[in-house]
Amino acid sequence: MNPEAMKLFGQALLDYHKGDHEAAITLLRDDGHRTPQLIKIFFREVQEYPLEKIALDLSYGRVLDVGAGSGLHSLFLQDKGLNVTSIDISPEAVQVMRERGVVNVHLADIMSFEEGQYDTILMMGNNIGLAETVDGLSQFLQHISNLLNHGGQVLLTSMDDRFSDDVIGIKYGEQNLESGRYFGEIRMKVIYKGMEGPVFGWMRIDPETLSEYALSAKLKCEVIKQHDDGGYLARLTHK
Picture (cartoon, rainbow, N blue to C red):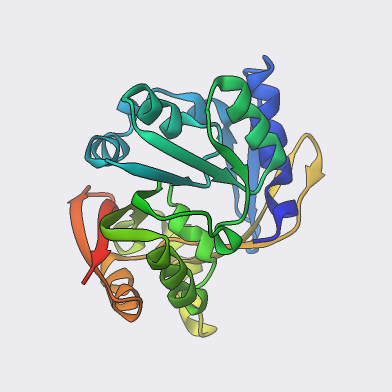
């Protein structure tokens, strides 16, 4: 992913951390749909998101937190005594994490990160979307697999949009299908304080498609828990 795409998001994290607790971004999709997002949710208690709390309780050993953002999950696991490595492509996010006390932080894109192997790889907040498209998913998962210790696990959250009641979102997905794209692919950009970042790709993926692509990386997929709205927690392990 282009680091510039996350620069405004990183700046919003930093502004919140420095005391602007009203900081908010807008996600502008390529169909014109706008989604406002308060930054305070990235500084919440982990208990507020049950799927993520389950994932953190299942984490063990040496942990890699991918797209760690504000360090929310890294700090929780550090406090449990786990050895956590946290990566993000945003310099501002890295600064926030370090100032909040995250110990081992790297400014890095997951696709170029090759430092060590891990027992648990976390991709919370739908960070499987870093693959951007299903066409990029096989390579993405193969790289993740290479970072995984024998017997290790990838824990990720995503959304199965087939369960969505968002009429506009469903129409967007149908337009994707008509143009040859996967239903859950998204093209959008971040707007913050009147500034617009570059367009980037993101993706929400259903469990069956995830399982299919995981097989190409010799990983098996297990859905640990799924909510009625389509949100789910999955675990990937070596076959």
